[in-house]
Structures are given as structure tokens and as C-alpha cells.
Length: 450
Ligand code: NAD
Ligand code: UGA
Image (cartoon, rainbow, N blue to C red):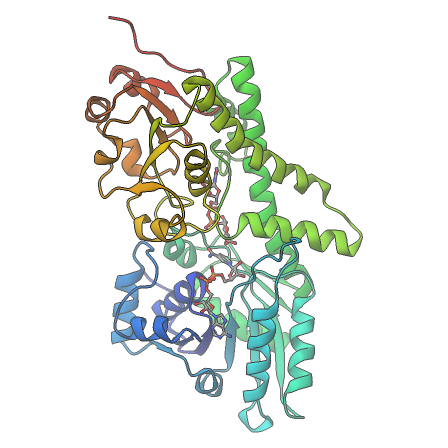
């Protein structure tokens, strides 16, 4: 790939998780020198040994090549990173509190650590918030730095939200639809534009507060699109219509677009659930409630309940029924199981006394850890997982599942009942293999009686 130019800026990233590690690596890939900092010593030591903390397509090779080119390094030494780098990105967690408000304690802690290192002699620094935060967090970060650093330090605070999707993070970072930069100072804006010049992407230059709001509003809108099509899928089931055809028909209107109109078991992951909650909370506090987002959450929760209800109606009692689940990760191409709907489904089936086996191409270790208190057997092979099963459920949209040899699966199973929670199996193929095929927002297909 050709990038705009090689600019060789020195960038520090505080927090080497999904966002910090992938953005840091992609900044290095386009020519910057990047120091990734994390306070998790084990994680940093592992990265220094070349061991990846997450599975993300194409990431490992890119890390290896940039480390060996001297453009990327990992450290626990936050002070050195700030002394060496003019721009400091914050990419630490912003998890939800019980009441849905955003826990900003990680941001506050890092901000104080940065403040303690800054000095007038060090010169100008730009502190960039890349974590997803409520509007007006940037101005609080600025106040904290002023309060805790020595007199005379020169800083600006910028918001630069991240829009990568897990499972395609490297691709998304190198080919962004747009870069959002929120800054109230031209000096900071100009520096940030230099950081992103190699990406050849449109830059949306806005004020700090608007940039923060763009991120919450974007994630909430995508979640809303998913809940919309899931609500439509319930209507399709009642009306005998096909949600895939409806999504195609409405999605071809460019004003709507087909993206994020895949009906399924609902959205999960570390971001949509928390960011919808966060935005509801922020809007309420500002006195401009986003009631529409409460309905988005309600539809999302109802979608899984409705699906489990359909399985219950089909199988009557779930206790002691052998149920195979394909998919544990919250989406395809990742080993991330945070807020995974597949995990919620497995928990719910186990709680009803079903005998559950599960398989995921990448999330068996992360899945086993989060389901340790659950009586589920995690299998190494997708076919072994279906052995003697009475129902097979597809819970995550992995390509492997769509490409499965359904005849082999059918031969493995005790009963030929397939519930496709992601509409990825070709229904006709399932029926030809002898399955009764249940999916989302479409008619159930039955095999011909011989
Ligand atoms: P993560 O939990 O994967 O990683 C956060 C990292 O920060 C961890 O490695 C942790 O050890 C480190 N950390 C915490 N406190 C620290 C400190 N004081 N000093 C140094 N390191 C510290 O989180 P994530 O998924 O990368 O998310 C980070 C932020 O980015 C969140 O606000 C999230 O909403 C946002 N975001 C995430 C994604 C995504 O796909 N995961 C996409 C866009 C935005
Ligand atoms: C999402 C956004 O897409 C990113 O732009 C954003 O940066 C990120 O959140 C974030 O802020 O962390 P991510 O959660 O990684 O990215 O993955 P998505 O592809 O958005 O999927 C989220 C969930 O929605 C998954 O559970 C997926 O199965 C579900 N989904 C997605 C649907 O049910 N239907 C769809 O049409 C699309």
C-alpha cells in the first residue's frame, strides 16, 4: 500500500488494548515512530516477546515488521513516552457504571500521570483522547492537567474518536471513511492533521465537544439501525415475509444503505451496549433525554429472548436436551467475548438445564474463562461439537459456519433441527441436508418427507 508521505512524528499511546495496540501499530505502519505504553506489566512483557494479547486479522505480522523496523515499541514507562513524544494519545477503558454512566476513573488516573511528567522545559504537548467518552470530558482533562502539573506547561487537549471495528481493525484503521479531530486550538489541529496526512482520508475538523458527541451519536445510530431491522424481523415472522429481502429492498436506497441491517440475535461487544447506555445517561444529565435509545436497548434484549422462546416452543422442555452452539465471540474474526450475545445465550440454555456444547474458531480460551461457572463443554472442532445434538444454534456470524458441510453435521446429530441466529446458513442447503431450518425474520423451512 502507498501512503501519502512518511512523516516520522513521535507518538505515544497510553493503553495498549484493542484500540491502543491496533492504532499504534497502524500509525507505525504509515511511518510514525510509536511508543505504546501500558500499566499491565505482563501484557507489555508478552508484547516485547512477540506474544499477541488479542486475535485480530493481519495485526501480528504488522507488529513484527514495525518492531523490527524500529518504529514500534512497548513499555510500562509512561514518563519516558511523554518526554519523547509531542503527541500523547489516551486509549484506556471507559466502562459503564451500574447506572449506565461512564466510569472515567481510568481517564482521570492517566491524566494525572501525564500531568506529573509535564514541565515547561519539555515544551508543547498535545493530549489526545481516543477513548470513547461523554461530551465535555476533554475540558475536564484540560482542567486536571492544569491543576496537577507545574506552572507554565504548554498543552492542548484534542478529541480524536476511533471508529474501528474489531475483526477488521487493521483494515478500518488504514482505510478510514473519515478522521474526526476535535480541537479548540489551531496549533493542535495542524499537528493532528500531520499525524493523519499519510492515511489519505477526509478529515472532519470540529470543536472538542462536537467530536466527543460524534462518537456517542455514531455508535448509538448503528445500534439503532440493528434494533430497527431486528424489530422488522419480528414483524416479518408474524407476516410470513423475509427480512433479508426487506433489508435488501430498503438498503438499496442510498439514504438508508444496506450496512448494519443484518437481523440476528442483537448487538453485543464492548462498545455498543456501553455506548448506548452512556449516551442515554449523558443526554439525560444534559436535560435532553434520548428516549429513542431506550427502545433500542429494549428491542436488543427482546431479540434474544424471542429466539430462545422459539427454541423452547420447538423443543418443549430444554432440560437435558443436547444443544450445540456455534459461536462464542461477540462477532466474527475476533476472540473478544465481552458482552457477547452468544455467551448470554449459552448461559441461558445452561440455566434451563440443557446439555450445551460450544465451539468458536478463535474464542474458545476467552469463552472458557468467561463461562467458567457454567456447565458448558467447549469443543476444539465444530463437527465434534454437534455430536448427538438435538439442536444446533448458530450464534456468531463466522464464515466457517456458513461454509459448513451440513450433510456431515446432520449425520452427527440426533435430531435435524437448526436455528440460525445470524441468517448466514443457506436455507435451501440446510433443507437439502435434511434439516428443519429456523432463522431470523424468515419462514421456517422443512425438509421434504421421503
Ligand atoms: P482494552 O480494555 O482492550 O484496553 C485498555 C488498555 O488500557 C488495557 O491494556 C489496560 O491495561 C490499559 N490501561 C488501563 N489503565 C492504564 C493506565 N493508567 N496506564 C496505562 N495503561 C492503562 O480497551 P479497548 O477496547 O482498547 O477500549 C479503549 C477505549 O476505546 C474505550 O473507551 C472504548 O470504548 C474505545 N473504543 C474501543 C473500540 C474497540 O473496538 N474495542 C473501538 C473504538 C473505541
Ligand atoms: C462497533 C462500531 O461498528 C465501530 O465503528 C466502533 O468503533 C466500535 O463499535 C467501538 O466503538 O468500539 P464493533 O463493536 O467492533 O464496532 O463491531 P460491529 O461490527 O459494529 O458489531 C457490533 C455488534 O453488532 C456485533 O455483536 C454484531 O454481531 C452486531 N451486528 C452488526 C448485527 O447484529 N447486525 C449488523 O448488521 C451489524
